[in-house]
Amino acid sequence: MEPQIFSLVAAALIGIGLYGVFVQAEPFRRILAFNLLGGGVFLTFGVIARRGEGAGFPGDPVPQALVITGLVVALAATTLAVSILVRLAAARGKPRD
Image 1: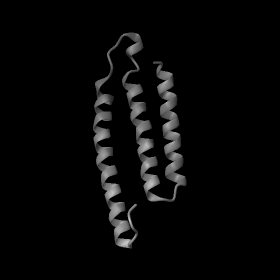
Image 2: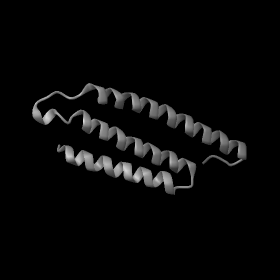
Image 3: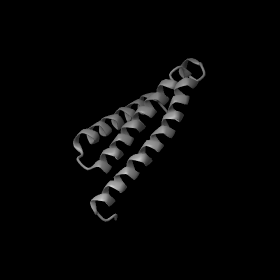
């Protein structure tokens, strides 16, 4: 596929994620928007890692390694944030759905 398509999708994900982080008032929706923003950033790094492939060069392994590490950290941070939200809701006496 064309790298321009991936770049446009990454820009759209970043834009939607930023909009959600700044506009949404509910904490869970902010966490989801922040994950969407992170997905856009990871996709941007993936596009950057493969920028020399059109000239016959291999992909750059450093951005690829950063994306893999970032995915693991994002998963752990999301798990921590959601568990904090669940405990906060339980402490306030709100039932879980």
